[in-house]
Amino acid sequence: MLMVYSYFWRMNFSSKLIEQAVDEFAALPGIGRKTAYRFVLYLLKKDEEEVRKFGNSFIKLREQIKYCENCHNISETQLCGICSSHSRDGSLVCVVEDIRDVIAIENTAQFKGHYHVLGGIISPMDGIGPAELNVETLVNRVKRGDIKEIVMALSANMEGDTTNFYIFKKLKDFDVKISTIARGVAVGSELEYTDEVTLGRSIVNRVPYENSLVR
Image (cartoon, rainbow, N blue to C red; front, side, top):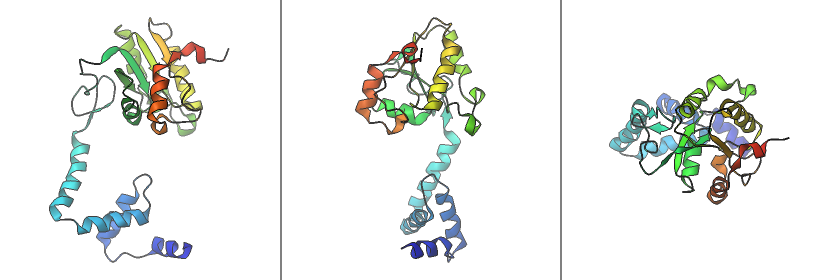
């Protein structure tokens, strides 16, 4: 089996165009060259119009997608659908690492506030510091005085805890409640991979952030 795989890895494609297409698919996270090759062969069997529609959808995505000027969530307009919704509580803001966490929390149907997408977490090993994150825009939102509670919903690992503490220090002098999701989310886990029931309960049963600090 290993020999077959090694041969495929080194094989010469009959067309340079196929090879280039395989290279593009294989550049996607979690996609190996064998899977990429299957994708290419599948597309070759489709009608030309269907393939054009497939490709244009990504071009349109890249050209027209925006980031919400309020929370940094993905959007097609200046404000995302959540920030512009009158049914959401703008005084309650959940701080998350990235857009995937917004989707994970929304799937629980347990949170009716707004979000703030940091765009990452503090990770010195990866060269990511506070300056690379959307922290100052969060501080500015709090300064406006409309926010009553900040819910920290970052991954339960060392980088997430470090980011939580940094944000807590930036906001502790403001008149705003700072809480964190309950530790129903296992230590070391990412929100994206936490089941909806557990994540939903962690949000509902959130606790004051000070309770999570080691004394």
